[in-house]
Image (cartoon, rainbow, N blue to C red; front, side, top):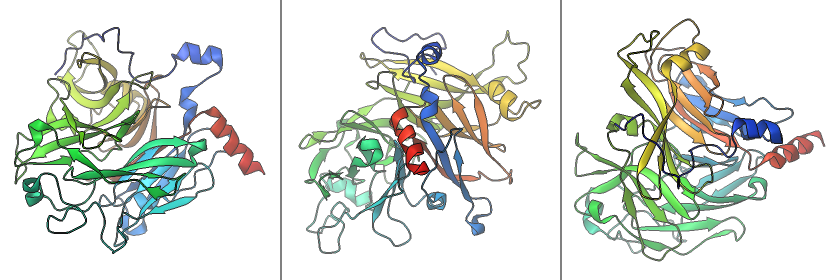
Length: 402
């Protein structure tokens, strides 16, 4: 585990926000206001299709989205800037992109070669596509990584979406402006993870795009998952022919359990990679209010130009408890669900408490959904809906008044 006293190199801006709180107040600009709402679906009362949307405080804002679409882990979900991508599920082979901030428009995409076979599915004997690493296909079952929204524009009305198969055989990009998929481009797996192994995602959070580079949190496995599975961050440039994927080591000392409770993030300038992580640390011996030998915290990790990680604790379990369970110190396990880099909002599940929203700048926590069945991990999936900028929110309010 990293040292609490680590400091970020001068070349690496502090992770999370585009403005400091005081500057935001002085300029009348509030990044937190870019959060329009949070949608979620729960296992609780699953037969009744339990799911919901919690709008952020703001006049006239409204989300166009059916939260029950989030109820299946078999349906990969990604979100960015008010767009939500829901992958194939329940026999439906199409991927749908929902514009949740404007008119609820749905773009339906099919990875198909025109003969009923998904182009990027893994089939070493088929004619559509073959994995670069034939041995990797021996262990794989086909399918895709969680799709990534490379770009968004026009208030969420245009986008580019990257899809890649699970064997790192190939990827392609869909452009909403062109209305079609681009060519299939090959992928070279990371050299250190390219021998008798497959690379799988190990979190349910959205991938992250910084420029044209996409990141996923993954693990490398053999024929069976092992206790020493190698967890790392997979990085890939979207446009390079036969791009060489790279593996980025996580912050040193992080428990593998913590790497399964994290979300990818960016630095304040949007150029550097970061991680929002829920981890367990030793309690401060000088803290008279400390009730446990260890405490759960939410930390922000930043990757510098020199490829070194630095760490800053955002808030500890006691700081969360004071706001969502006042008078009760729970020190419950925290599971990160997602992070919105525009608003600086992290959404997480607090064990036996419920779904919580936290702004990392103001440290304000809000309980969005209270757990009614403490014996289960009640949440299935959740996603944040953020506006590109304040004008996008203002435009939405005007549209609703017309």
